[in-house]
Image (cartoon, rainbow over all chains, first blue to last red; front, side, top):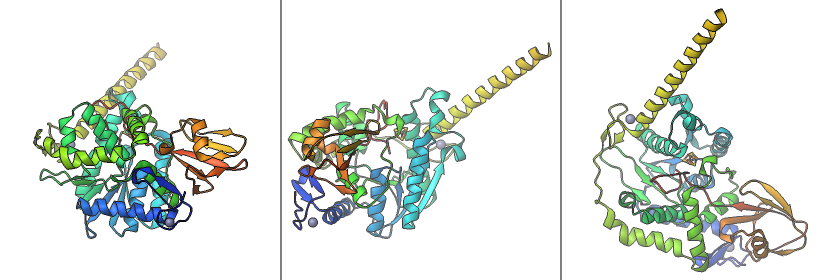
Length: 320
Length: 77
Ligand code: SF4
Ligand SMILES: [Zn+2]
Ligand SMILES: [Zn+2]
């Protein structure tokens, strides 16, 4: 296979575009697609400060790399979730990446700053780790962006992620999520930072290829909690369709954004106000993160009390 | 050739003879859009012929999502 631009041996075939590129021309194509997304959706400008949420995986590090390369003003934000060896390795990947490029990496450690981590959620509460994890990340991205004066939060969601999410939201007719599924969510007066997904035009084969060709050392292993995620089945289903009709995913997502999303916007108006405990925006009483912390602290206190009681009982029986 | 697979766990398989990447993936029962095929830091397209003495990594590109989501269907952030 040959590069469409220069005729040299191709490194990657992109069936959706019915084309193939050599390594340097693929990197150009990747940058072009990101620039088109940023400009086309008016995500941010060269003077604005971008907070890139990084996990150590291919997408978020590819995103940070391309934004640095394009000259945008970025800092990375890594959340230490405390998910065993996976977290230790992914943090190290982010630190190595940032150090090699002299880029600014912010780290928020859940255990260090809030006294719990995702690893202990299943033993402490009845919540699924992913639900506690997801709400903690959304909360912290927003909090750090607002407190440190960033204009926008960027995440590494790619075309496959977005198409799979859309399929899930359509299958369940989640009108509220459909209204909010977009590569750009504007800042809200109530205190939600602007959020963007500059990789939404690129498939995950492309983000992985970019990471490899740019020499990015990312964590290939997945978070252990992602095993069996429903979104993987949606991705498989879409890949099946894509195999016989290349371009299906892009058509599905772009068609929704161009023609259908507007129909859902405004159907589910939610009023946001400040959380009485932390001041972050929320729909309910205390925000989901403050409620999570409250629950964890309560369980930990109960556990400590049980331990103390057992120790007293043991000491008493030893004396007898 | 030695083939390094990364999913679901890292494992290695030995295969005899030369063949096109396309055929290799078919034998391994892997969908070509879901992996990168890497030989010594170089990406291979499906028409490339791999040889007996090659070491090939078949690296998955599909990222998982949040597990067991009740309402949110998407990939985690
Ligand atoms: S898979 Fe679940 S626990 Fe792991 S990072 Fe994603 S949301 Fe968090
Ligand atoms: Zn070329
Ligand atoms: Zn709060």
